[in-house]
Length: 498
Image: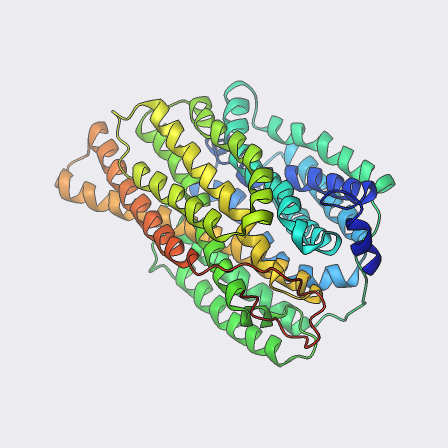
């Protein structure tokens, strides 16, 4: 590891051409993997028609993806310590490529769901692996620039997913989405086989199967329960919603107690002893809740409420996605110079302003204004996502990097699923209440349905705005790490507050 640190001072943020090549290979893989998280959002109606399935069934193509990732990521800390970079990346990319091929030729819903599960299995390994590799290779004072480069992937890929999907499904079969991704995945797999080198140390820890079971039931139950709440004709009082959530929470309580008692835990939760790490993780969770839910709600309203075509909805997302890709490296360099605090404050402010404006969209709102405020929101996310994440991980000693990245990525995925289910449920409940009050038992006309959806969307976006407001207030307490914590002798995370 000391050799890696010495190499990083000889060049740019990644230190050497060899390191840069490793990161480029991994970024390509992570890009296509994360792109798939939102790629099917706009395509679901076409898939439902072709496979003759109900919306409540089709939503599992997205929910199942998040569920697998939420279950798998907590194990990544163990896997990163147990296996080499090369072995893990090739395995993850191989799973993703196989899943993409299965989904492309799927004759029915079950085969398509299996393909999505295989894709998610690869995705769940790729992002924590990439982040851990960067934190091993890059010195603290250059991590903002390095993570800004990674931020292009994390923010740009899911942002342009609806755009790509909208354009493709309007002119081609939804299967084209998978056929288009497959060659890229195979190229990355082949390139990595010949060029990817190992950069992390292997310590050969043993897996604690009780922790693995508790983690799987805990995170899986919570994601499953909240995701089920967003399905059609399902309420929060349904047994299929609250029972998995209760079981999941109980499992996580036992999981947490076990990790804190173990000398070598599967997932070291002592990272939360650091106040800045904990605060930053909470902010990132709120951002993911608002981001994923708005990327689901806005397309639904624009298509079903305002009558926009799928390609028009896709282009609403495009400028913001492009801007996120441009700004991510820039905000990374700004983080290296100024820290995360004011980037987070400004970014959350832009997010809050955009969500507040979304709450008051009507049929009279000009198209360009919708594009503009979605762009502002994406700009805000690009300003705060990677700086806050980098600042959080900078608080930890090097031996806790795999655990810190696993914790952050797990909670981001779980919060994304929870946020989507929560806001979709709030929208549906408000919409139903408005219809019940206004229709007086009669069959509602199309105009009343649009008004009801508008009311539901307003309520959901106001809730998202409230959550972001809480995160904005918390961002004033973010402090910056100015000295490396990688040589901390005590083995405990320091406070990292300067």
